[in-house]
Length: 42
Image (cartoon, rainbow, N blue to C red):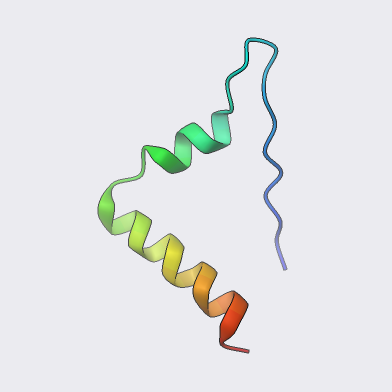
């Protein structure tokens, strides 16, 4: 299992969260589907 560690830079930015927020709708759907399958479809 993979785990994403979120962290803030010295100036208060969270680059991982910014990246995830900027994904286009198709990639958002793939990400949420993968998260769902990993958690509930074992």
